[in-house]
Length: 294
Length: 230
Image (tube, rainbow over all chains, first blue to last red; front, side, top):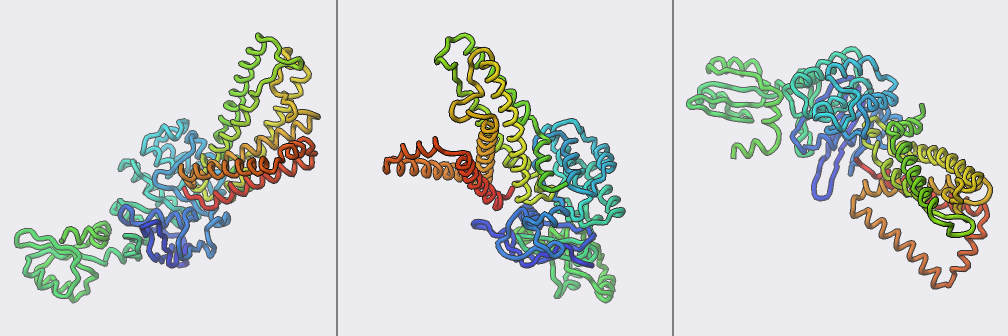
């Protein structure tokens, strides 16, 4: 695995707030990475810095060994579809046509298929589109361009579940045929969980998890059973979340559990279950946890 | 295709304001002026003068402001650097202004040939400024159009980068510079000398002056876009 984007100690301070705080991570080439976190966690800022659109206060970002800032050679290999992407006041087909000039790898046939999938009215000005259609334009451009490094920042605002599924299916199918580096930021964690090979979780401008999706799934488990048995089992384990209903308790603990622990759980008549990526992130991200338990 | 040319082409995707709007408004202004001067008597023996050609120059400033940021977020999405966006936009400015000045010079010539469209109207002919041989009119028109477009571009970028307050400060500073210069000239009682200088400016001097002002504006615009985020 070779990192195509290397991010070292990146800090971004605005007046009175720190959007990114000493962030170091890397994007592996030809991998779909999820950038997950709450609103205002710093996801967009990080993506804007990777694409040279935002300036960092300190730190360094290297894309294929070069700084992306004002570097056409590097920027030309990237495409960044933003949340609420701003378009000039032009028709959908004009925007798609214009985007195709910038990417030698642009696939016109794929663009047409996607337009049909999303039922995009190509002759309509972009500003007259519905919220979901507006998002679909960005998705069509992002996929059809086949840019070497494609960044999607919450690309599906207003898209319905069917359209979102089309996006996931299309992304995966096209990625299989034309491997490239994709960074996808999203709130809809469970929806994309199966898509992601690598996950970066960011909270309050800091990286709280950076691991392969499989690894992350094993990092927490739920333990369900009678309160007494659960407590006995939990001694010395880190509890991420606890719920009690009557004499039953359901607890999320850090994993993974080894064979010994699993055998012990069986003896105590405890039920061990997986924790979804979404639940893991909710349990590990930020203040919410402390506020609820307080 | 070269990245800079690609940006210029990107701007032309939305060409309504560069074609129909500019020339439509100018045609309208011309027709109104022609109608007025067709019915009123001659004000001067050499014909009637209108300052209405200034419309297209003001327009240049306005579309410069628009061009500053209209395609910028989209260009950023498509991996265009600030430098390339600015240079591509300048290329568009120079190309459009060249085309416009050719048309304006042709109309200027035609107006002279037809005795002011048969109305002794001086619409495209401006004394002192747009006078002399055709190539001089062409270069002057091109230079003035380009300067206003570039200035509009810079204003648009300032507004995007520094918002309302910054724009006000920018125009405030500009006013201070202009008024300050005027005060110094007045204080030195140098207005006659300035007048002489401008009147006696040869082609080389005039080009030099325009190039200097153009360079200041272009560098200002470039310096502003380098720190711009969208």
